Length: 396
Image (cartoon, rainbow, N blue to C red):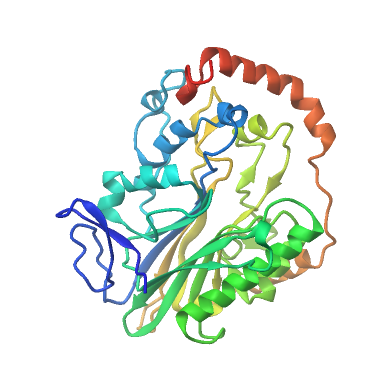
């Protein structure tokens, strides 16, 4: 059974991993021991397989470099048009224990696997992609099992695989982390398809752990494409907890920080390539089962990452999505240890209320597109003539 891959520096190649074997270079201090802390993170990286007109606006080569390399904005770009003090957000700075990426293409995966930091730090769920783009897990903890499961087998044209990593946890049952990317776009059909995909992903996690739903400890994270407020009902239907909501929703004090991960108002690359885009949505989530929440508590509030521009003047961000990251700490029963914190009743009340709301219409319409198209075409022309970023000379 597959256990992922680690980089063997002696053989100078990625090798199939054994959960008990010597890594040959990949570092971990958690193998075979009780997991005390976890930093779990997710990001939709925005695929680099779009037509040239889109690629002209999103400069995938520069975004890829920014994801894995620490450098000032001045050196991140081929043209030094932004303040050199502006830093890119990247994997090394994030230092996640388990990182799930969505929309990873074969080219991006190969680039990540070639990075010294990745080779030194992580086990990886797979070395190749069998689709245009998909989900990948990187972990500092060795995998016990890695599974790729199809969650829409009855819908051939809308198939989506989840990647499930199972981890050993000494003196406790194994736990799992699931990276998922559900069907996008606003429609009743897609809403129902997302419900099916998430329900099937939860079932796959339970099956991978070899237990029942009440005792399966797992995290489910990724671009879940919750376009509607009412889709919060999907969380409750699957008996999951939303770790952003647990950190930031407090109905009692009236404080609710939405934590938009797709935000056309702050990520200016979004309306540059989705012409006229005006929406702000909490598409990405880090969810967990109640059994997982009984074992681990939120140590620091769930927060955004990859939300800084690579080049603000050219409206270039790492992705059209912001990432999510949360620090988790094992619950302890010893004297003086943090007490068990049950799921917040305020959060449950907010999610129930939202889950009961009617499906709202989209603020992004054909008129949004038409109104912004002239400016968008002018911006494209400037990029094409000046040769923005990685595309300099490529399409001239």
